Image: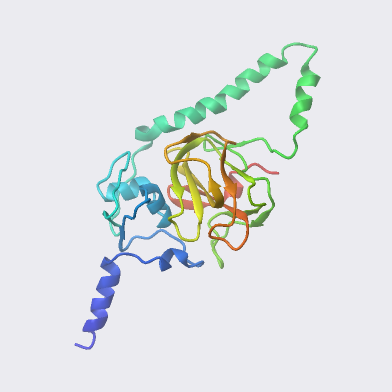
Amino acid sequence: MRRLPWLIVLAAMLSGCNTPSIYRDDAYNPPVYWGRHVVQSGDTLYSIAWRYGRDYRELGSANGLSPPYHIKAGTVLRLDLRGSAPTRAQTAPRTTPVRQTTAARPVSAPAQSAPASRPAASRRPAKAVPSTPRPQVVSRIEWQWPHVGTVLAGFSTAGKVNKGIDIAGKPGDAIKAAASGNVVYAGNGLLGYGNLVIVNHNEHYLSAYAHNRKILVQEGDNVKAGQVIAELGSSGADKPKLHFEIRKNGNPVNPAHYLPAR
């Protein structure tokens, strides 16, 4: 009988809703496969999946949701269930714009270099911009730096966990989309991120831009690589900086493996 109160508490923890403490802790690293989440006003399936380190497609499948994943405030999403993500063939159309963009550049270059008198002149402008590295293509996506500032803290999965990189800057500096995609979240509902923008690039990759002073895009907007999407700030942080993350299938990955060297 003495164990009964503890069993009741344990059952409540396993079946009840998760508290903010599980994603506020610096040592905490998702994914979460227990508890439940009550949808709040402003939540999207993408932001909820981001919070708990889940693939949005898998979490939607686990709760019987299908694209475009509309959810209402008050809905209870079960985190203790596991779903399945669609196959690549079902989601391939989302990557088509990116593939067309990357293929267009190599084709046009030879046509411009054909005249014998202009090769030297056409190459000089490319060398005149050393501060903006050329995009790096990884997983058929052209990645570029979202801000030119110094990296303050790198990606880390041990000790003080950092699920992305922190980049220094001044309030109001332009924050740019690291790759083309669709804005799936623009708000301040995730603790620790401040004003946050999440961009969906294809069926596997998402990127996030946190601590903004001002968000310049809305959910549903299509953005191009290099487009200004926010102003750098210190919302949810102790000083002005950009916290930038890339996630593959819901899991944080090191942005240094995707961004071009500089």
